[in-house]
Amino acid sequence: SYPPNDDYPRGFDMNITDGIIRTRYRDSFESPELLTPGQIYEFTIVLYPTSNLFARGHRIRVDISSSNFPRFDRNPNTGHTFAEDAEIRVADQQVLHDGAHASHIILPVIPKG
Image 1 (spheres, rainbow, N blue to C red):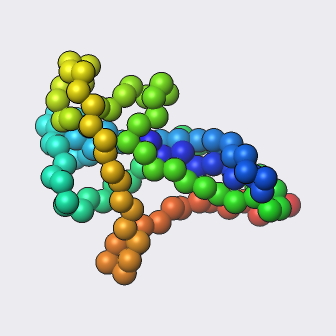
Image 2: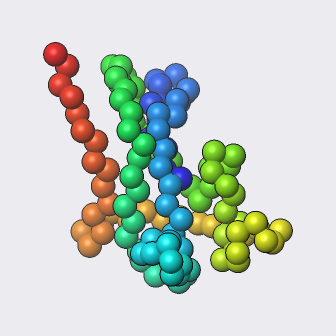
């Protein structure tokens, strides 16, 4: 899950939108393929359309997570068939942002008019 937030100056943040990608279906829904631990993958996560005016002093915050339950069904991170096991594993995400891995967010900006 990938929700941008409006991060208020006094510690409150408000979820603005989110998006999701099930990585086993990153190349095909017909031929799911699990990730290989330690291998680097590139993902494009499309967010649901929205609009927000960020007031002075507010910041944009992005959360990367392997779960957004109950908004989306849970991901036990086992690789097993969904909804058929009770085992749950912790998943760690790493966003790379060096010269070889230019992670980025594209945000359209509408000038104040």
